Length: 537
Image 1 (spheres, rainbow, N blue to C red):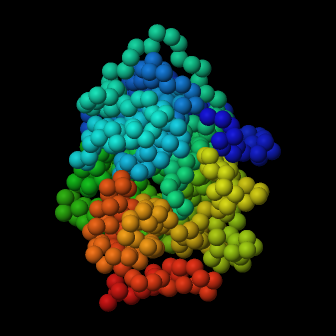
Image 2 (tube, rainbow, N blue to C red):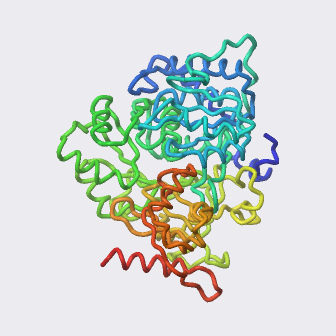
Image 3 (cartoon, rainbow, N blue to C red):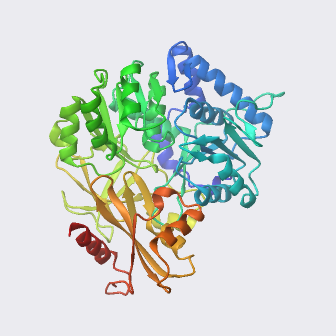
């Protein structure tokens, strides 16, 4: 990867962040080595099939790093990692961190369309998957992606590898491992929520990401006795770093990998392993609360439940704190950087009605109007941010970067927020054309473009519609040239094109024309109002 593929922090800002002690020159492999020295015989990670101490995790990391090197994987190579919540996920990514190879954190629901895009855009050389998960065969997905991915040299499988390379039978290394990466190097790629087309790749360095971990560990008051239940997908930024599994490893605690978020599975782990903290998206909260009433599990160890990823109603927030007798911590962040927390000693008026404040005193916040002018105190505006762990550009996306970042390096988050007198952010919605389906971000443009590939679709517009469980679902308004085409035909078409299931419209409405704004654009405001009226009838 060339440095020109991403935008580093300006030298002056980088000097400030180092001088202020934000960036300490730590790397992920270096931190793991230190934790092995401190906590080698303590449990690091537990899953359905594994229980590894820090020393055992380190042994697995070394074995995989040597095997990947023997395969020919080199520093700066891009590697797509699409694994479920399992202990091997962390052995794989720490091995890649040690080599300086760059994981791309694909999520389990991603399918052919997304994976092929990642392979082509990043020129990935390897794709690491489970054999099957949730009744889906990822080996077949690999077979479908390979013909269109000329740089992809290896498919590495956890489980039954079939014709591919087994993660547990990598070749032996006859030479030394390469030199470890620098703290200023890119460590991995997260995925953007995506408001324009397919998800963008977000380059995160060792320096910036570990700084966010260190700040999160302090705010969340983690210690070596902390036990974190990883419920949402392990590769998601929330589950990795807020404080997430990587934050818990930084603190020397234990991570419990929950393969399925259903409460009958997750609540059992809490009692069995003495879980002290976990993170949920809002749709899981009422399901957990109902299950806790009927199952009556032992949740006495659980102290903190974090909620983030989508809007969380104050009523449900109050229920969570009272019915589970825990401390609620709201988390509002983005894979591009900025993370906000309510603090553990905040009152209910803050934890139930706001999304908290930034990790760092070095996080710069601007709330502006449509002309980039500051709004008055307490008014709603567009959130812009810059800081020691917020990127300055997406990977290989010059045209998009020109729109997504200001000339002085502030990231346009796409969120509309207001700032309370106490300095807490309240998220009021999105300015970007995006649907937040229970924490899964859907680019309207991406799905619209897919629909337009159908021979009988003249035009398409995707909008969010309210949903009591997920917060938002997607509704597609479609102008067709053939009345024979039905909703089921378009849904089948999108599935056959390999689009992730959560991106397929929940509802399709056929119309003869779209309402227009005064300048002739499609008025999605009117489309949203129409579908809301239909749902309320």
